[in-house]
Image (cartoon, rainbow, N blue to C red; front, side):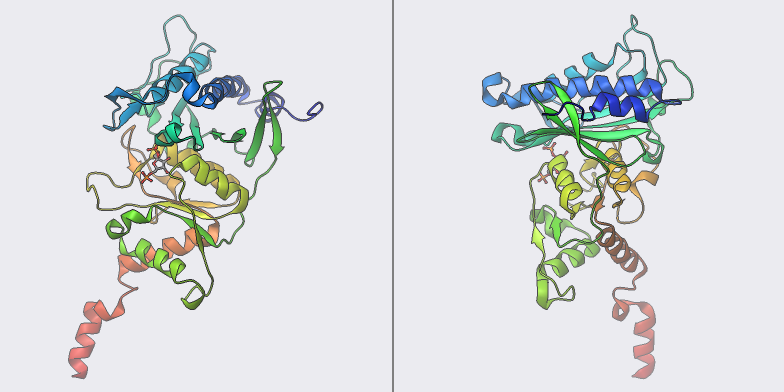
Length: 353
Ligand code: FDP
């Protein structure tokens, strides 16, 4: 059925020839880890690994047994090959040093082994997200090596474990989707050169947080909800799966916008999603597919990280909508969205009176 079609291995070897040929081998190991995780997740309750651990991760979130197992799966599949200088993940406080017995390389692998894991016990799609950066030389990575802006990523991708398992990847030459052919164990290129439609009538946000959002986000969402009779003059649809990988996948397939904005629910957290292993890889995939990814106040890929587990506001998807949100943030920050409240207006009214 798939004989003669492009496999992931063929694709990455061809796409990484030359300067990044070692990265091809690393991506094939990542894909092997993804297949292991797909098997584990696909067993559902029969795996015996559903439920939570007694432990919490560095973010203070309760770890699921699957969070820990999937983290181990990626470490074991990727540590031995000699391409890596170090790894970091959502589930580990500090970067993981490559064991002494294995050779070192110049790449850094950063990942969220099971994103949306709060959905794993309810049989909703979850995923693995990864980002690859590089150091100038091979050797053991220092924690500071991981703190590079997303624009320096040499590859990024995610796997989605849904009715089918897919791996969506960019090595800087577009965004491409591969579907796991379970019988042969091959990922087959089924979605070459994915493009996000420029316009959309679908938005995704957790509206239970509405009262905590900043005014520009409240403005944007209320305009979408106002539909045909509002200033957008169009009815919008809303989706919220609470699994970022599934939301981003839907946007890559048919457009839309996904928002996890800054809110004041917990003032210590400037957003919910993590920059290095959630926002940056997804931003690269979306931009490579012609979409946009922003904090509301600038391009996600330009944010200079200060900490491994740093959080960031995320607004990504169809370009026109992301640009509109950026404009609303700018108008809010400059006061242009409320001229009647500006000191200049107050002065003018006084003068008139
Ligand atoms: P999770 O904590 O289950 O891993 O990564 C954070 C994330 O999931 C995203 O995948 C998802 O979009 C979001 O959190 C869900 O947030 P809400 O609980 O606010 O719905």
